Amino acid sequence: MIRSGLLLLLLAIPASASTEIKLALTGATGQPNPGLALPPFEAEDPRVGADALLAKDLREVVRQDLMLSRRFEVTDEVNAAEPVKGATWRLTAKASKNADKVSVRIKLANAEGDRETVFERFYRQDAPWMRALAHRIADDVVKAATGREGIARTRIAFANNRTGHKEIWAMDYDGNALARLTDDRSIALLPRFSPDGRFLVYTSYKDGNPDLWLLDLETGHSRIFSNQQGLNIAGGFSPDGTKILMTLSRGKSPNLYLKEVAGGPAERLTSHFGADSTPTFSPDARQVAFVSDRSGNPQIHVLDIPTKKITRLTGLNWCDAPAWSPTGEWIAFAGRAHNKDKMDIFLVDITGGQLRQLTHGEGSNEDPAWSPDGRFLAFSSTRGNRSQIWVMDADGAAPRLMADVPGTSATPHWSPAGR
Image (cartoon, rainbow, N blue to C red):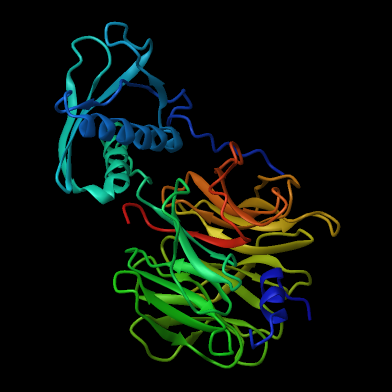
């Protein structure tokens, strides 16, 4: 029986252990992003060195966030007497530090004419959380200027083996603030955030079986969610956070199940002698994309939950790890067109009529995960000679390494916006 690559990986671990698609990130009309002039942030009191240093550090983080947002053409303003040409917005800030608190006042104004203020806000934050404050400022600027939610406060969870064991880690979307979330000292894989960002569900072998655990990120406490014999793998939370999609094998062929977060028996969604795995909800929770080998090699299929109708979307040599876009139009997945190809990231539309290859053999590229705004994809890639977490635009442009984390990293998942 042929299984998907992810299931092959899990089952191999001992128990002890192309149509053209335009997805450009320019403005809604296809025009270049608006310019944003960014002068130096100022100290509330220029005579206080700590205030000046705070202003400088804060600006560096905000500047990076605004550039990574890909919502603006950010240009440094060197001299206020010489305005940045072509800029739409101008962002200024004054910062101060008093004991263990930092205070910041920002102003977003029109860059031309009378420089009318369009957004102004005052912030006060504990000093150790300066970076978190900078991320919040960047998100507020994005919201004020574009009406869209920013993603600077989001995090990426992933599996990493730097300790000698596979554990679940998380980092800010810009690759900073790396933190280990589990200490199972075994094998932990496939983290999935809840829609409110409070919980993380993941698979762990710490009790010998690949069980599903639910981690409360506020308290740090975890509990067993599913420990059926065989595979227990999370596909993700429902959009309302009340249910979790799962792959369960129960010692037999893997199939798809749905279970209430509050508990109770799991509802079986598929019943097939082959392998149905790695499910992902559509944004309206009426459909589930998943991998199945029912037609031969693993392909992407879609299950309509109310009617139980199953539709096949792909016809490649191999497909794995589908992820439904937050906007609903696309399903990202890892796959290969031919047997000797490396794994790459693809998009398929929900009809199966449009297919686009986003990566092209730069190492093995797997585990796609959407940003909450649907504009970026995180994924694992061996293009740096070991598996690490990368991010790229939703059209495959501008790939970048998120962070040079020791060890190997895989199976990323993006937290919701503002969490």
